[in-house]
Image 1 (cartoon, rainbow, N blue to C red):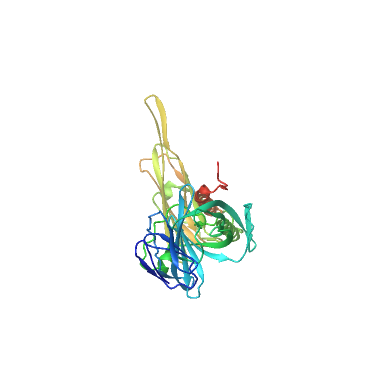
Image 2 (spheres, rainbow, N blue to C red):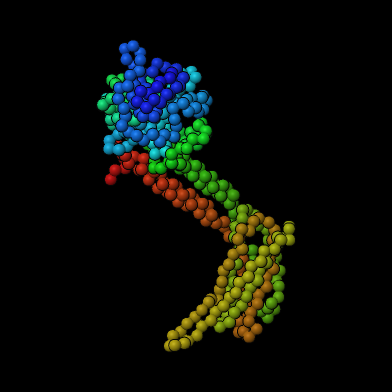
Length: 410
């Protein structure tokens, strides 16, 4: 098909597989229609001069397993000033698809054979046993066009649209020139368009599109987190169900015998999962200090874990007030002690000038396992889920901001 524009002498040539009803010059937007003799006559001209389209008439791209070329471009507008661009594409089998772009978001639409009753704008539309919620109904005007069309472009008439969404899918029912047609739409990523059409400059994407998929699925996230939490709790219970608190060392150590000397405990066996070894030390320090050094020795590997603790207690009277600092008892842990055969190397020490302190009392207990780590993970997942919920809520609120059927209106 080759047509020369009478208005600007631009020649447009493109092979199309349909009978052309209307043609719009890509250069000056003059609208041509066929007369009774089959010749194209200039009828009118679109006043909109904006022609900065990412795709042009004749551009070829590979989409959905087939090669398509752009045969027509339409710019539609809804009151007060919301507009979008539609590209009509045809493949070698004369099948057509439609690409719609608005604010940098792309939707791929195909014509449906199914007929829907939407005159009364029902709130829900059912398709393939799934519900689609009404997003908006409106009257759109074609304010600009380019290329070849197998239908008559309405002049001074609006196109009635009723749109239903189930992100990332939609059903759009259009009534144009008295004919009602349904289209099935799917959100398509910008990267797919760029891959299909090489060397094109695509518009910047901003805002939230009406069928743009959310980054997160709240239901799936909740199910996954619940399964992880249940697995953690069950595993923790199974590992530690037979484990109990076990005292492995308890003794009062005389400084007259063991001051700054190492004591070797009896060997002890720990069975079960990893748990902290809690060491409690008490001594009668008075305005002085003492120290305890502990080494836990694994008798199978000879690996040693060291821990050290100072015990200090000071008191006095100054500026008319009594004061104290420190304590004569301290408690500390060797964390994550696993099952095995161990013994302890204990070295007590006191200040050389302290002649009143005579002994140090040391108790070592392998505690019942702590569930803290499990609950920290569970609480962490709850916090993460609430953050995801917050962002998803705001994402959906922005999606429905331009709809008369928003569930987020205050």
